[in-house]
Image (cartoon, rainbow, N blue to C red):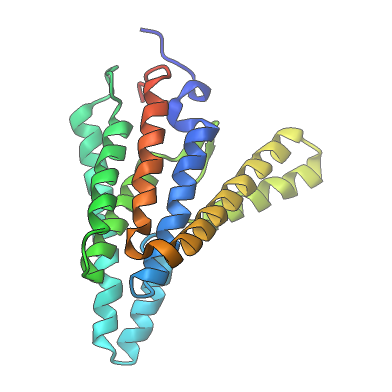
Length: 224
């Protein structure tokens, strides 16, 4: 079977990227606003807050930040196992779609769990699975659940465009800034939805991921 080019990969399409990134922004806003001021996605923030809490002897807070960190590590491992188990052979359902289904289960479950530690652990694991499995949009590396790498990449390519006039660098920079804007939109949607939906707000994310899952089915099967 013909090996398709990277631009044909369903997981690298702009619509799939948009759905994943809106979900990523919503998850971060949800965990911070509704689940005890913890960043389920931005683990750098959790590491800083963990260290500060430990230095100040606030051990309950240390646990709040250590749990999502541990869950993030586990989520990365789960995504790797899913890819290993599914292999790279052409299938009706690609291994990345299996990851999406696992995310849907974790995120939907978190909506019905009153304990913030457990809910944040499930969200962090889902985030890790997503960031491990979906790394490119139109051939450009990106992150759908955090912004620092996207901000660095966008600024770098914009600078290269200014220096060289290469329009390809401009296109790449705009792509990075688009991801950041979509992430911010997702966070805003989460913030607004929480006012009326409360803990059920996280259920928006599984819906978005299921739409991405369906969009990937309708396109050529990936082999990498």
